[in-house]
Length: 609
Image 1 (cartoon, rainbow, N blue to C red):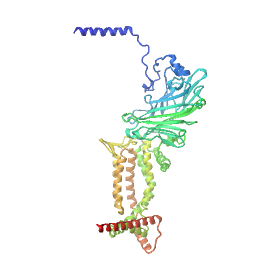
Image 2 (cartoon, rainbow, N blue to C red):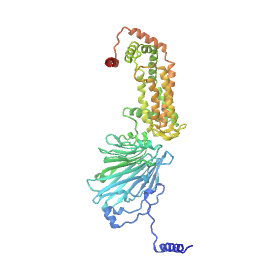
Image 3 (cartoon, helix red, strand yellow):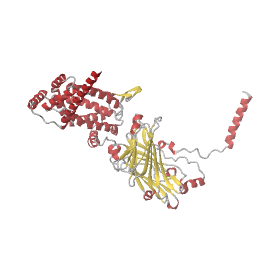
Image 4 (tube, helix red, strand yellow):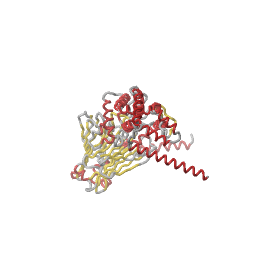
């Protein structure tokens, strides 16, 4: 070994020995922040924070200096539904676990997680705003596991000089997802001002498909009506409530966390949704700021937290005005169908059927049975059109190049035989509200979440049987087999209908369109819940079977005799036209006149050339 290397090693050894002898060991280890703890199962106090100068603490916190130092201790209250962890630092809810639910990848489902959630309670004082969540409260509460009819009170108190105090009280019930919350202050806070309540939450990915998650999460808030933050999946959004807010919720696709005002509503509420598209674990970061008047704190402000599933029957029992509107049931004219028919029917079937695939089949059969009279009427109308098919074909042959003349002659034929061309459409249109209602209901049914059927592992999201190595525009990067089956059955139904329905003249080929529409819906519904596309598939199959059965009870020969009798009866009798028929005939006449003028104009132009 060279001399320089030996000298270097000796110097390094002397430095290490000198460091051990001359530098004293620290009494306390480096403090670990509470946000680093994500498992609330233990209640050991966290390490004591580094002791700042007492004069600095007094200058910064004033009367609150006595609470600026302490040890953060956790209290865990557990029920059959939730496990709630409270922290004495700030007197806040530190973590909340839903015990009956898992994330899409079967991990514990936390709606409040220490690393991804923060509250703030900024109290106005003469020294400026003091954030109470930075200070330490005391409590006599201990860890408890509650029975179903039991409840636990967790009270945090910050005692100050001169009988001044701040107290926060939580009541956890043995069942359900509502936590009562109250905050009271005595002798603290600047009169005429407001405590600023803040809530920042990273909405963790709880469901499959990050893109669909970002479309679904939002902030709902209720003034005198329900409002929602814009659901932009790629951009940041913000809003300010123009009126006092009765409640607000941070809404996942199937879960909610929110605050409900029991007495005085929240003032000056502002909301933000922040998106980091590069973050694969956080859907969006939600921020809410609201004011609680200091005067209300002196009397004791009362609230409720709701932290649980966005299940219609659960949220409808929450004592808050229109809180059930967190479950979106479609447009106003569709909502009654879902609220008073489909949801109760779905829940009734749940009482007897545990397999949700079988339940959906039964739901289809019941709905189709109820709509049978309309289906029968539609089929009879199509049968009349089939009987008239030879006459309609003859009209087309007589006027091969004159579309307006064809339509005029057809209207005359319909009047003679007493058939309305729209009579077959009206029954079909009457069934559309139910199909549209289901379109909005199924994506919001938490009952389908993580329920499997056949190859679909989760009926609340798409069933992927093939993941593509690329992404198709408007389609996605996967193949949903239920969507393929729905499309195939729709095309089969269109083919069946087209074989029985005569071709109608017009600028649009309706038969061709009946094949194009299912293909368009295949792209639209590829990422929709498998439960919805399975329902549509079964509905198409049942409809075809239903029409085959009805066909056996419809005597087309009898229909032809009736139409012929009507034709003879009305041949020389002028029949009163409906307003729609008058409008249609007038439109056809105007179209015919316009066509003649255009032909004359082209003829004159040709002669000049």
